[in-house]
Length: 136
Image (cartoon, rainbow, N blue to C red):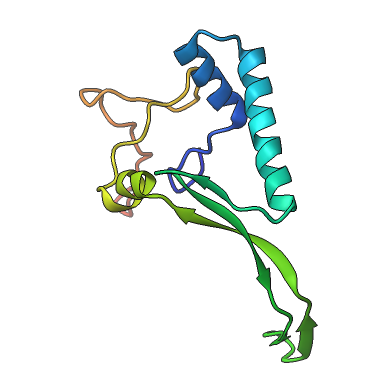
């Protein structure tokens, strides 16, 4: 887990969850997921737009060439035109991710190193600081 409390979910974790939900083997789920991702990349590489209703839309946009300035040296630099991938959030995702108040974190994956201390357990003792009242 990162220092800001956000967990990064890997493809491997998603494959495991989907395999558990569907009863398929992890190998099959991984193959299907990779084929799906490869197809998305291929479609975008051909300049096509991908629309997943309620989820969102992926599309390629052309960013025109421009002249920019290096903030450190104030030197003018030419930035070439390039293609970028844009994602527009769909209605269902927006409602769940953007509009609703943030829900509690998912439970930590099995084998996580996160320490859990019961509320009734005493807090770890802090080393005491020496005082100047000592006769020594």
